[in-house]
Length: 407
Ligand SMILES: [Zn+2]
Image (tube, rainbow, N blue to C red):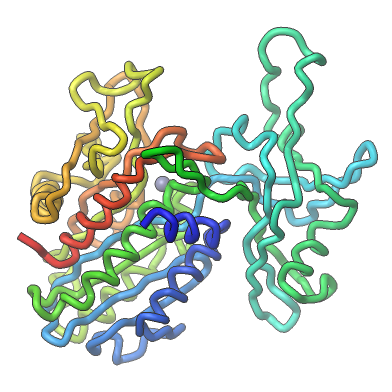
């Protein structure tokens, strides 16, 4: 299943592409897309809602009972976002002024062949997906021109990318979308590594593994589980992939926004009291996890060492940076057992900061019991990250078992 995943990564250079790629796949599998949540939102079958780089899909089985099984993830990844007026002309170069989006490992974005991808809106108020293909580069300074360590990266000055040809970015964007540059009124375009994912033995190197690993695995799992849902307990299966996780989730399309709440409330209303139903449901918050780095093992807790290709990682944090609790952890561990998949646990080293996910945000917002899990990565937030091939297979199987309510 690695090549289809590499294809999905290539199709998803931006959050908007990732949401569209997932939605297209779900639509092809019979999910019906609608911008509005009609009164038939709880009708048996597949439903789909896409908005601003986020996607929520839900499958209502024929024998549905009022309980949700949600897998939440995110569509966005760190990168360099083109500024509103991005054109800079300097020293004979056409450059693109960028804003740093999220927390990229900046040095890793230098000397990569970069595409600009995202969406543009034209004067007729329609959205167009844009993927320019490799057009830009943030060149390193030649080592001969400094002594000692590389000079510190200035986030404003040194991140401006160089275009390979002397044409405005908007023109390149228009050409890739098959529209006229003059028609573009506004844009959201972010850099992405233009190189395809590469299999390195038992590992996979690619851009945006955080968090396309989770998005793709949850998509596979939903499609596998939906046809079994009638034979299982009849839980309603939900996939929610949010935008803007890398910048704190506070947006209409982020986990802090109303997207999932609207869907769950609307669907639950067909069965009973939405708040009660949501409180009786469960969410897996799926996001990349930290594998132990062989050169920096001291960054981890000495007795919790998640390794590549040893199974998905359950993430626990007493200070609620992750939403897992004993009840939801047990659900996850039992799903892994039912799937015959090994699992591992991450807890932070007290002297080292740890990340967070959509888990605490959406569980707090909705009162939805949640467990945080994910595929272990190295180089998280690099332009090219690294994960295990077996872990992707394990993760799909564990999420499928979770959706199926397998015991
Ligand atoms: Zn993430």
